[in-house]
Amino acid sequence: MNFELSHEQHELQRMAARFAGAELRDVAVQIEITREPPNRDIMRRFAELGFLGINLPEEYGGGGMSHLDAVLVLEEIGKVSIAVAFPIFESCFGPARAVANFAPEALRRRILPKVCAGEMIVAVSMSEPNAGSALTDLATRATVRGDRLVVSGQKRWCSGAGHADAYVVYCRMSDAPGAKGIGAVLVEKDSTGLTFGKPEALLGFRGVSSADIYFDDVEVPLDNVIVPAGGFRQLMEAFDLERCGNTTLSLACAQSAFDHVLGYVQERRQFGKPLVDFQAVQLHLAEMKMDLDAARLLLYRAVVNAQSGLPSVGESSIAKCFANEMTRRVTGKALQIMGGYGYSAEYPIEQKMRDAWGWGIAGGAIDIQKVNIASTLAGRRFDQRR
Image 1 (cartoon, rainbow, N blue to C red):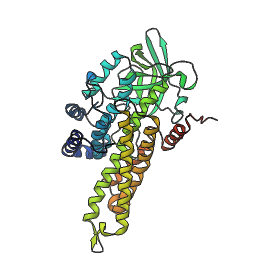
Image 2: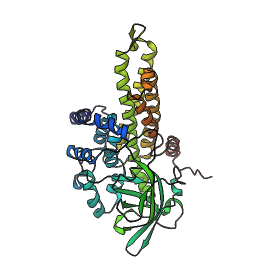
Image 3: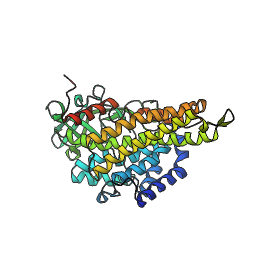
Image 4: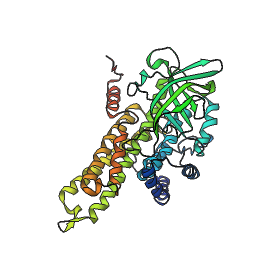
């Protein structure tokens, strides 16, 4: 068991960090002010550097690298800005992976090269007004009419809504009850009948657009079916990898807050000496570092054990759950150590804490991850309805 990154991985990590520091910091500041997602110039730069779809197969324009390589890049970009890193997250861990793993070959070849080239952003559309954690209650329906699918319904909390070019839409594709009737279809943004609600004003995640999506008899080709009815389990397997992307960005929030406060306590003086000389501060730093290392090891275990496939639900849920709770603790301690400066929008910590809280809600709430963990321990799924 080797806990060291390879020379090539260290170089990849350093390259991503240098790029983020040189080209993305000013962009991140503007995004926080305007709340606008990163522009297509940023997407093109990501594509030039090979960051989009870094762990997708080379035959589809990806980098053909490992999930761990993708984690290393995503964390470095995420340290600067969650919004700037989001296209990398979507291409390496999000809906693009569902297309890569389960879509028909023709659809993969039509969509994935555009994603890797920075020409297309694909978002996932799962939750509904009455189906969040209880996702199998979703009511959005796709009905076959001739050689077309007609999609009708409403989605909520779609990250990328209105900004993305296409959506992996979870929908009911047969009359079978519960999960048995659920599949997924790709709906492109310019489809007739597809509209978006008012953009959400969220506590954090500024620059990651979110809104309701309305499907009013939206027609899409049958070739756009990613997974037919009965494929819900497959979709959730792909979501196990998305949890690892969520974990990575939780880690990025916490690590960047820690890095900032570690420098701060060595410069800031009170009672005639640096803050780091106070034992109470030392204890907080040690606790933060232990949290960060534990989260990173859990994440690396999940993605390395998956190799180029998909992680287990148990390992990905443990990694996500721990990192989601960890990032709230670490960013909170960082803000407390910095006092008024931490609470000020002139410094980055308050932003880190706002973003940190979102990851324990997005991609499956913390308590849902704990249910998943218990299910793997017991070797069975628990029926929450009874």
